[in-house]
Length: 613
Image (cartoon, rainbow, N blue to C red; front, side):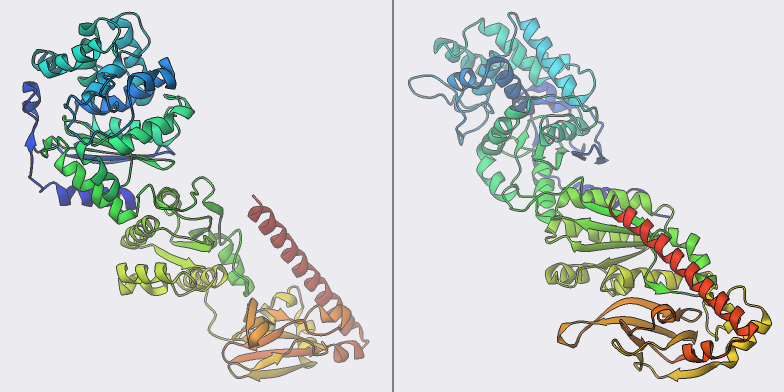
C-alpha cells in the first residue's frame, strides 16, 4: 500500500509540524474583535494551476481577509475604471511605510500604492456602482468568482472595524479634500470596512492565489475572475508593495508576489504554477503573520521558487509519453513462457518519459500522476533524456516521491540522468543507500525495463536456470519428435565464454543459432570503440534467421554476456538433404520464422503508435 497522500502533501504535513511550535508574535489588538482569534490556529494550503489542492492544519478555520482584499479590489477597480483612471488616483510606487501610514503624493494627494490603507480606500471608490450597496454587491460577486462559492461578511468584525477606524476616516477625508475620492466619503469607508471583514479560510486564499497564477481563471471552476491583461498589473503591485515595509526583504528572500493581512493570512503567487496561503494569527511588528513568513521562506528555499529564478516552464506536456512494460517491453528476447508471463505482468512496470525543463509545477504533475499510476503497479521508471534542466524544487519533490513510494514497497528507477551530475549528487545525498539500488543503476529505459522484467519473472517463478531444449525453442513450435530429432542431427553444439563474440558485423551469414543456455547482446559498433546494444537474447531465443532468406552478411555483433551454449544450424547442411523429412523441417522452420517476424512487426507498430500519441 502507498502511504496516504503524496509527496507534496507529506512535505506540507512536515512543514506544519515543524512550525506549529513557533510561538513568536502577538495577535492584532487595534481592532478589538480580532483579539478573539486563537493564537494556536495554523494552516498551510497550496493550490496548483491544474486544480490540485494540498492542505495541512487549520485550513478550514474562518477568519477575516483584512488587507489581502486590497489586491482583489485593485484588480476589480482596474477592470471597472480602466488603467489610466486608476493610475490617476492611485500610484504604484512602494511606500516603505506601515500599512496605515498617511502616505500621499505631495501636491496631488495621490496614495503611493493600492496596498496601503490610503490607496485601498481610494481603490474602493473606483469600483463600479452609484451607491455603497451596488459597489459592495459588485465586490462580493467578484469574490465569488475567485472562490467558487458565496461569501459572507463577519458582522462583528465589521462593526469593530467601523467603531475604531478613526485613522482611516482621517485618510479618507484627506483623499476627499484632494478630490481623489469624488463621492460620499462615509459610504466609501463603509464598503472598505466590509471588504476587510469578508470571511475566508486558508484554502480560499490559496485558491485566490492560484486564480491569479492561472492568468485570472479559477483552476477548479474554470470561471474567469480577472481579465488576462490585468493579472500582471495586480501581481506587480503585490510583488513590490504587498508586504508593506517588509516588501523589499520579502522579494529578496522569498521572491513571490504576495499580500498579507492582520487577520493572520498570507497569500503568495507563483505565476503559472500555484497559489500558496498560510494562516496564523500571531503577527510581527510589521503586521505580518510570523508563522506565515517563516513557512513561506522555507518553501521558497526548499523548492527554489523565487520568481526571478530563470528557466522555461513545462506543465501539461511534462510527461512526453507513458506506457507499461506489457505495451512496450524491453529489447531482450525471452523464451516463450517468459514472454507470455510478461504480457500481463508487464502492466506492473510504468514508464514516464519526461520532456522539457522540470520546475516545481511540472514535478508536481509527475508526482500526482505517478501516485495514481502506482496504485496498481510496483515499478516506476522516470526517463529524463528530454529534460535538459531539473530545478531544485523539482528535485525536492522527486526525492519525496521516491521516498514515499519506497515506504509503500514500490521501486523507482531514474534513467537519462547520467549527464545531470548535480541532480544525481543531490539525490544520492538525500536518498538512503537501500533506496539508491537500483534507482540510478540503469543507463536507459531499455536496461531499466529489463531489470524490472527480471524481478517480475523471478517473483513469478518464470526464471530459466537450466537449458531450454530444442523442443521449447520459439522457432521449433509445432515440430514433431521426428522432425526435432532430424533437425538436431544436423546442428553443432557451441559453447562461448563470457565476452566472447558469437559472430561479428560484416561476417558472411551462413547459419542460425538457437540459444540453449545463457544470454547474448546484439550490439552495433559505435565511434571511439563503443558499442550500442539494440537487443538482448535469452535462452529459448534464436538469431541469424534472416540469413536463411538472403544469406548476406551479419549486421551486428553478437556477444556472450555470460557462459552461453548454442546449437548452430548450417544452412548448407539444411539444404543438402532433399528427403521428405528435411523438406518438412525447412517448411516448419520458415513458417515459424515468418510468424516471429510478423509478431515483431505488430509489436513495433503498436509501439510506434503509442509513442506518437
